Length: 371
Image (tube, rainbow, N blue to C red; front, side):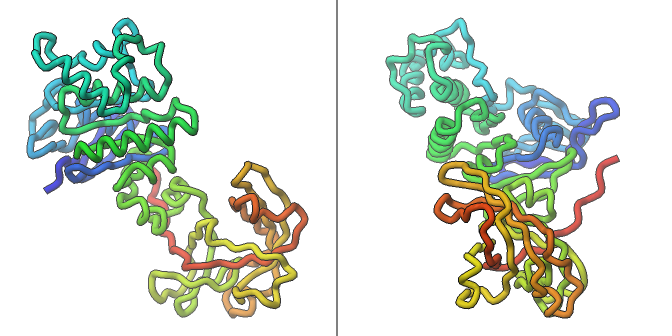
């Protein structure tokens, strides 16, 4: 039985639909990321779980208790749910000790010990307890916000883009620390974010939303490698989407003949490749290439980014697709944007052979937009 179950949740704001028939099951102790572009409904869904919004239809059940639906609605303060907001939302007039202990009874004999335990849990020194929030760094403030949310012993933790205001290096370190802490505590966690890398690294389950609908759920690896459609593919990372013709288990496309991992198909469809599947080799090495299915290309642009650079490859039609007797689009003129390490980045103007490793993934069509 799932720890948290959302069944056919709807939410409308006047004529605008925020959620449409959203169903999601979350297991106890897991970390789930709800991800999607702005306006996809992910924050509305989080607010319904928290109890600050009431769904227009559907049910919400947490650990066997109906929180919304069937004529019931449990208010936010009775749900036992902790929330960490984007900016931490610490009380600026209170010191760190009082911020953390805000939800603890002041006359509780163990209150001070609990505050110290929480400081140790989020790896902050007790010497910071008498400081005000503005005397702490952004990462320290987010850890204090997490400690405050943990203080009452919540059964579910909601994280509403809590790392987005931090700089890159601090964001990664804080995210890892929070994931480790929540995992060790066994607290079921839901993260709302628009950051793909954050969702992929933090969660053990991802739910992708678009226009108020839930498009696909699954493990980070499964969604990255086997997205349902182009929207999911492109939202979870760089993706190369190409039209193709299928002949006896092969996809014939502008990049040549590529294996597919979903059985023997015929007809036209779209395929997806991840950029890391594209191999570039100097054109001079063509005779000795280990990848016979390849096309030619020219590096027309490079964008230096330190250790990781972006290269733009314009393909040249070398007749490979025509050799397959399929109606695949020609390669000529197609441009690919690829991220490569600095040591793998050819200079602009270089001629290269372009080949593919691994199998292509077949995409479904996007669902029609909501009315």
